[in-house]
Structure formats: C-alpha cells, structure tokens
Image (cartoon, rainbow, N blue to C red; front, top):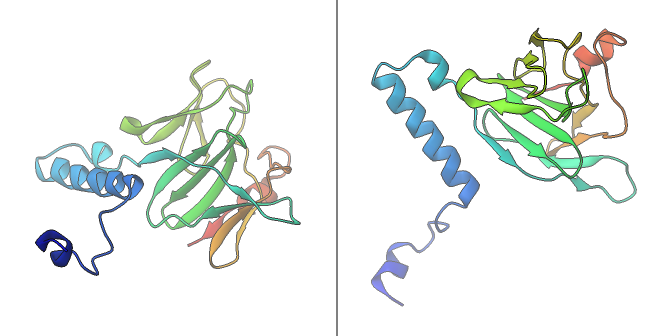
Length: 171
C-alpha cells in the first residue's frame, strides 16, 4: 500500500466524469459571477447524454433523479430529461414544428430548433419561432428512487393543456 492509497482510504475515489463536469461547471459559473459576468452566463445548465433503462414488465423508462439543474439527452429513446428550478420534465427530443431534433443553447439557457429557430425555455415553454406550441412533454412520475417516463404517450400543449401542465415531478 502506498502513502497515496492510505491518504485516500475511505474517500470514495475520484468523481466519475459526469460528476467532475458538473462540479467544474458550477465552479466556472461561480467564477463568472464573481468576475462580473452576466447572470445569463452564470445560469447555464449542464447538458449531457444518457439512456433510460427499460423496466422489466413495464413500458416505462427509468432515469436517475438528477442532483442539480441540467439536461440529459437520451438519443436512443428520443427523450430529453430536464431538472429545472425544483421540477423534472421529460420531453420529446424533436421540435413540435417539423420534428427536427432540438439543441441545447447553453449560453442562452434554452432549447432551439436548428431548422427554423423556434426557441423554448428549459421547462418546454415556447418563446418564439415557427412552432405553434410548447415542446411536447411525456408522462413522468417518481417512485422516490428514480424518474419513470412513458415514452409511448405525448402531451401536446395545444391539445391537452392540463395533461401537459401536469407532466412534471416536483423535486
């Protein structure tokens, strides 16, 4: 056993890549605010890639409950998972206008369609552009350990505003 091994005994080892990037983003945001950067730059949410796990015997996908605000894109299942201001949301990956995959614009803290520039807030609310409604939400709930999403049902805000508004989990 080396002195390095002994000094780190019980510390749990170094953070994984995702945790390291989250910590680095938080540190960078704090530094930017300290240096007088704009609040928008400090509010940038981290985005990463992940994949929901299919629950045996269920049609739902299970995702980890995020520890902090940010977005996870699941390209395999065409889902965007977002934690934002104390709530979790599951969105269809595509823009409701013409089904183009949405992109996260970190510097503006919003989603945007690269095709016609429709813009959306992190909670999926439409801001501007050619789209005529909010991002499509998927049914989501929590079992206390993870977030569970039904990828086979979609709430469109213009057809089911109550379902769309309810498709979120308070954290």
